[in-house]
Amino acid sequence: MNKEAKESQPGFWDRVGIGLSGICAIHCLLVPVIVALIPLWPAFEEFHEYTHLIFFIAIAPAVYLSLRRRHSSPRITILLLSGLFVIFLAWYFNNILGEYGEAGITLIGSILLIAGHWLNYKAKFSS
Image (cartoon, rainbow, N blue to C red; front, side, top):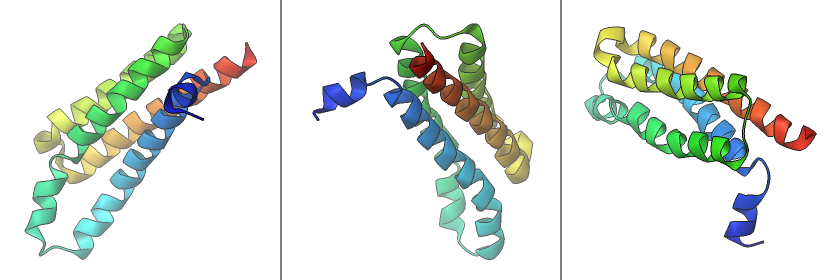
């Protein structure tokens, strides 16, 4: 199956969004453990500073393309856009939130995104 056929399948971008949001959630759950286990690795902290921005940049197109494929309900649109916004806020205010606050806020954003993508995915197959 070619690339265009895969992308045109119902729910493709929702599955991509669920996967990316899940990876983001796992990242946020594991970072405090890794930081506690490797306190002498300063390069990790520099790399981690940009991971939420990278996740935001990767997730934003999946949200856009999921909503573009079919007119979603307002509830789904709100879940997806608020999840994306929460992840952006976690990255933007990372210095104020601290390591655990940033991870917690990002985890909330990931859960909102996963819920929105899942509901959108289900709606595409129930109609």
